[in-house]
Image (tube, rainbow, N blue to C red; front, top):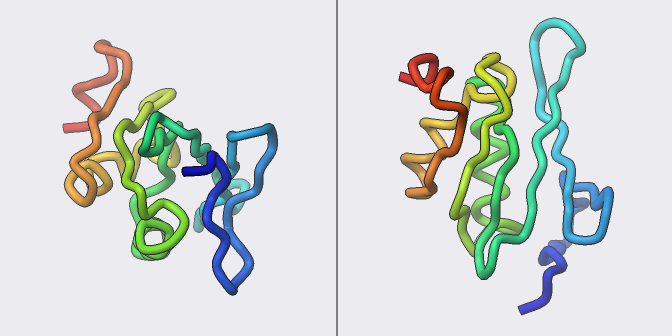
Amino acid sequence: MSDRLKVSHRKSRLLEVLPGIFQLRLPLAFGLGHSNAYVLRDGDAWLLYDCGYSSADCQAIWHELLQDELRGGIARIVVSHHHPDHMGNARWLEQATQAEIYMADAEKHCAE
């Protein structure tokens, strides 16, 4: 399997910023109006670095990606820090994909 993402007939939401590293801009209803998540190849699956704010809009985007470009599955979710625009969808994605969540021990209480 290629490290390249499968590209469907529609324009991908994922932007390759470096070889094998893809940026995903996720909507926010406040502040900057968006946050960034990153998707990297992790063996036969994918690793997410941050996962956006917990909202129906963000979850719809993740659901769409899981059905298309990320169909190989997500193995790991790395959360950079406890702000809701970085970790908001971590538990939702964990349940949807059975991925493992990695974050600083000092911030794990924020995810529960």
